[in-house]
Image (cartoon, rainbow, N blue to C red):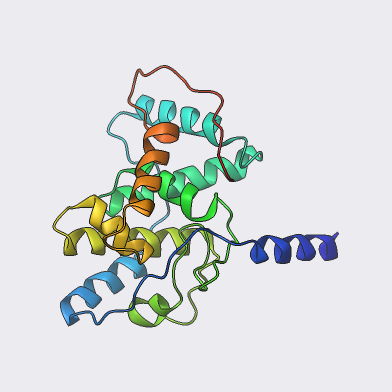
Length: 208
């Protein structure tokens, strides 16, 4: 059984992911320190809702939409809670982040792109050196989400809140429309939801 599991993991890791090449740029000391502080904050993930009922409704709805990609109930809800927590603490919309993950890795934890980006949010390894350590495992769900959300927040700050340009930076394709349009499209088509909105039980993933 262990041998079969290892073979499956290696096959998953070998699958290509849709990611560009985040460009390594010099960080000011203050920015690097702030990002390092964010990465080192290892608080346990939790849903961040003022109204517990709203949190329960969000988790139920997103779980139904993600079930086709991640059939295991425990792992699916564990991932959703982590996405919501890491996105919220970085000041990002969790459903935007789910759109980004769909485009970047198709929710494959062990995805590797042709340029070496890793995991759910396709984080480039140079970020370990820039704001983390070599001990940070970018295939670990929590670590990858924390790095990815911290990086996207950094790009949003650089671009003064311009999400379109921040997404371009995240993918290493600043100024080109394809990637931002893919992420924004995935967000709006598959993950956008407000409390009280009708449930969407079936979601298709073109090309995934």
